[in-house]
Length: 73
Image (cartoon, rainbow, N blue to C red; front, side):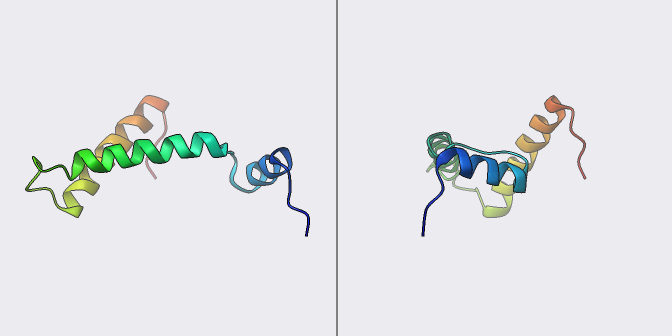
């Protein structure tokens, strides 16, 4: 079985999802997600729950979508 090259993979994924995230960029995004999770569950956040964390992430996501001019829905 021949594995696709990065250009072939990018075209395939873009066609399927509408965008492509390069593996290096994805790795950096995962590091950022880990830092955000660390902030949400830090020892100082003793009253943080999973549901409260989701509320915070929804607030952030909504703000970003608003800045991009996207509508919820």
